[in-house]
Image (spheres, rainbow, N blue to C red):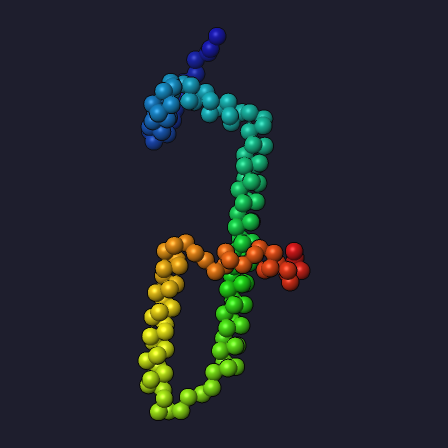
Length: 140
């Protein structure tokens, strides 16, 4: 046996209930009953907390990967700049224009290669084993 209860909802919420009822092919009463039962369920909060914990764990792993990738990128750039500055001799003034032209040509080739790799989904960071970046990290 069921008892009748009159409740009032904002118009937008009624539209949402009606839309959901239509999509699920259920009555509006069944939708509201399920929502109230879920709200009153003693394990509902535990389920929500578990879902939040899973999402936070996933986000934590993603942030750790981003930190690793950023660290690898920064270290790679720093090593390249140090190496380049160490081995590149200064050019005489009369050689500057041709060197700048060659530099622009090489840079354009670099950008084209980078664009192709990114379009294919290739990534230098994915080529580095996971355990290499964490080998010197005291937190690992």
